[in-house]
View 1 (cartoon, rainbow, N blue to C red):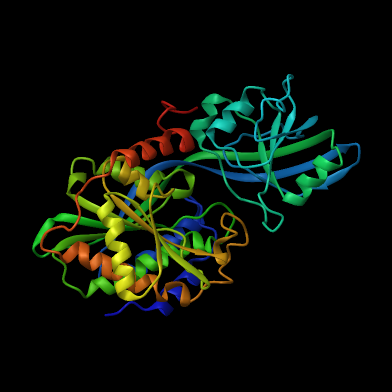
View 2 (cartoon, rainbow, N blue to C red; view 1 turned 60 degrees about the vertical axis):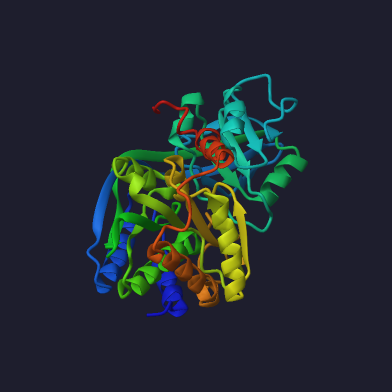
Length: 420
């Protein structure tokens, strides 16, 4: 049974609707995925975990002085809410939290020129803003639908919204002095599910290879390339290997909660920590399906993997950009626990609008899978059917440090010690 790019492209379209973890959209996607896996002969296991989710109920921004104007905006999840009437305050542009630009007074509404990472967030919280406005990175990008990590709130919180680049430009250049920001959202604890199926190894069943993709999206967007495309890829691989004999156990996992901070994969790794040493390698699929583009692989593991992938790509005649780094996806949850991983992705203009309404599948299709599909099939074949596992189960020290920094400096999960 060979890899079918058309099946993958069709599954991408089928799954391209809002699927925030813990919502009805996620349940709908789960039913589709489970149905597909059952049709291939698998018996899916639903692995339940708990997580916090949010719903943005209302977001608005209004310039009050020196002119009046309603500015289109989108709310940032977990950033808190204003009073029902909103907050009115002096407005100040602080760029990237530059010391010279940060106000000496508290209670202002601040405009940042990029999405805050944890370090920028901490700097902004030091001046106790009444609210934060974030400019989109490009005049060609629609509004992001994202959240901050709940763990960040131990450093403080302020209602946060995104505005379009051109609106931020006008507010800065025309000297907006006073604005009113309104953000109402609710939060709750709920259940979500990872979906797990297994192809049992015939010769070395205790040795495992995990192939994974996240099936959730950010709130309110179709999430076509991120990551209906990766989920469709996962399903087509599961179909291909359903009829193949494998020496090692091959486990396919569709994770949820990735967009809220890798929640599903972290829960899975924690649940499996007693037997995680059996997992030899993880193959992660995130951001796929763009027709016009090129293929990438990020290796969080031994250098031999990068070298092999480069040789294999040349053998097949497909270009593959390979690097050794940390990939911001579920592969990092495994790398944090010492399991080497490879994340395959598709760089394409189709994914330029990820986390926004533009990630709608318009520029996806069979060409998005035609080269990366056979390449990943061959790589998985090597992993599951070599008599001796071909790569050491290790992560070089330099990459281990990068993984630790990713969790502490970007996600802020490790340093939090809990959250409110």
